[in-house]
Amino acid sequence: MGAILLRREKYVDADGDLVELVLWQVPRSAAYPDGIRYRLAFVLAGTTKPAVLYDNHHPKGHHRHCGAAQIAYTFSTVGELLVDFLADVRRAKVDRKEATR
Image: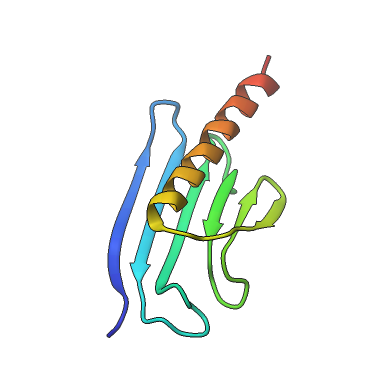
């Protein structure tokens, strides 16, 4: 079995920010023991680097980038992954609004 695309979504939200969600079901392996591969990105309008990025490429495994910080991420389910990602997106939006005051 090869990779099966579970979700591919890319859009610009009402604030002009870019959101991209890509998730695949993959065979369980040493590289992907959970059988999932993903890249979830949030890019603030007017910038090119993601303000929030969740991914699990080999060999790093599950991790997230928030600004310049790279942090290990404990994966449980795809649903929880999306909830956590969107919570970090909301925080990045709040941080931007506070920085421009």
